[in-house]
Image (tube, rainbow, N blue to C red; front, side):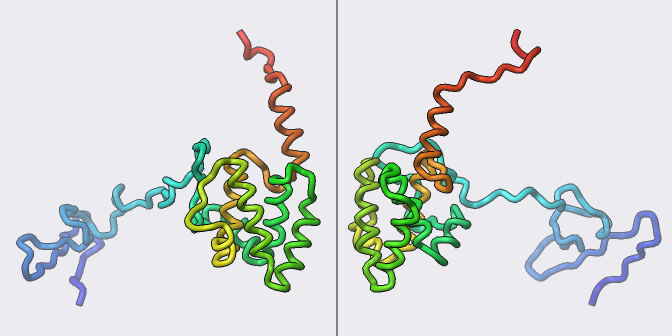
Amino acid sequence: MYPHVDTMSENPPTPTYSVAGHQDPIPASGIPGVQSHPMTIHHHMRHQPYIPHNLSRIPSAPIPGQWTSGLCHCFDDPVNCAITCVCPCITFGQITEIINRGSKSCVSRGFLFGMLAMVGGACFYSCFYRSKLRGQYDLPEEPCTDCLVHFCCAACALCQEYRELKNRGFDMGIGWEANMDRQKRGVTMAPIVVPGMAR
């Protein structure tokens, strides 16, 4: 089945196979044009670094009037996707605290969402906040009306809204007040100069 290869000699012959329809024999390495010992590791056979297929969806500066990510790009943030699938009230609470600018707490809105979810009314409550988010950032109502998006795919809608706020500079895990403190420090703090570096 396999050709005999003498691995003890210094320059063993390269076994080749001919396949009907091919004019040239195919080397045992399986790579056309490479004629060498099959046990040798070639530089072109080394593992290449992994480059993700979704590089085009890496968030950049938000464009006014456009969503920063699509409705079905939930796996752009896999941790949030998992949390939203298991307990959407956490994601909803985080979103509403930012949208309400801290006037309503994450816990109270998340709890209310959970209660409404038990009776099947959470999608109507959450679509109100999607409309509010769109109004704050002048985002289009797509792919369909807000209530229909939340009714058909509430988890995807919550993930998209979470990513939208995150891509617009909010740290969703720390709440409104901490985000405002962080922004104030970023504006009022002078840059730190390391001695010997300034000339």
